[in-house]
Length: 427
Ligand code: AMP
Ligand code: MG
Image 1 (spheres, helix red, strand yellow):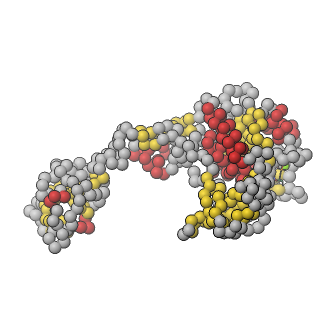
Image 2: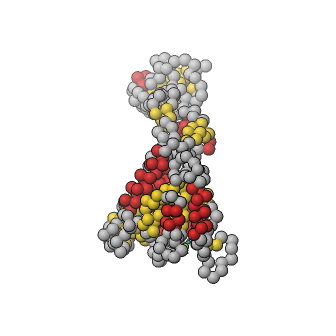
C-alpha cells in the first residue's frame, strides 16, 4: 500500500510522461468561447497600456505651476480653451495659464501636467464671449490623475503566460490587446464507467437491493467542474468479459485520454478490474493507497493497440460514493488539471482552526468532510454531523472542505490548526 505522497508523485510523473508524448493537444479558438479554457501560448502586445497619457477623472487639465497657490479663498481662475472627451484628440497643446475641460479616459493635451478633479473646481463667469473660465480651488501635484502611457504595461512585453485558466480579467486583457483568436490546451476527454449488479439508472423503479448509479452522475459533474469533458459510458454488470470489452473499447479509442471506473476495485469476489487490466497489457502503477476513505485505488496505463499517441490513463475508483469522490478530488482532479495544461494544478490546502475534535485511526491519511468558513481570526472548519462512513453520501452534500489527519495523528483537538483540502477549486 502506497502513501498518499507516493501515489501523488507517481500520478504526477505519469501525467507528465503523457504530456511529453506528441499529440495535437493545442487548439485555436475565438476569444468569445474561451471562458474556463487554459491558455497555451505566450501573449505579447504591440500596444502600450494605457495607449496614451489619459485622464483618470472628469475635471480640468492644467499646468501644476499655474495653480500652485490656489485654495478655496484664493482660487486660480483660468480660461477653458478646449474640451477633450474620451475618443477625441486634443485640438492643440495647452499653453501656460490655460485649462482644458477633460473627461475620464480622454487624451491629456500636450503641455498639461495634471488633472484637477471637477469636485475641486467651480465654474465662473465667462473669461470672454467665446471662452468660458474655471476656478481651481486646490493645488495639485504634477502627474496627479494622469494615467501615463505605458505605465500599466509596455509594448512588446509578455502580457499573459501559458498555463493560466482564462477568466473574465484575462479575457478583458486579451480583448484590449486585440487578440481575437488564441491557442488553448485541449480539454482532457474522460470516459466514465460504473460497474455493479446493483446499479440502475435514475429513472428506474428500484427493486430490492438496487441503488441508483449516483457515482456516474457525481463523477461526470466532478470531471466537468475540473475543466475536462465527461463521456459517460454504458453501465456494466459485474461481468468479467463485459468489463474487459468495455475497457478494451476505450483503449482503442484515441479520443478518450482518461478512463475512470467505479466499483469492483477492492478484493471482493466481483472485483476483477486489476486482473482484466493486466490481460489488456496495462502497466499497474498503484493498487492501494493508505488513505481513508478510498484505500482501493487502481492507477494504470494502457497501451493503444492500433494507434500512436500516449497511453490511456486509467483510474479505478472505489464504489462507495464518498470514497469515489474523495479519491477523485485527491488524485484524479490534480491529474486532470495537470493534463489541462494548468501551471497550478496541485491540490489546494488551507489551514483552518478545528471547531470540534477530529479523530482518526492514525494508520491511514484520513479525510473528514465538513464546512470551511471564514471568521475574523481566519478559516474555521466544522466537521459535518452524522456518520463519516464512506457509504454515507448524504452528509457530504453541502460541505466544502476535507480535514486531513496525517498518518500517526489520531486526534486534532478543538482549537488546533488542521489542513483542509479544498475540493471545489474555482475554474
Ligand atoms: P464496490 O467497490 O463495487 O465493492 O462497491 C462498494 C459500495 O459502493 C457498494 O455498497 C456499492 O453498492 C456502492 N457503489 C458501487 N458503485 C456505485 C455507484 N456507481 N453509485 C453508487 N454506489 C455505488
Ligand atoms: Mg461492486
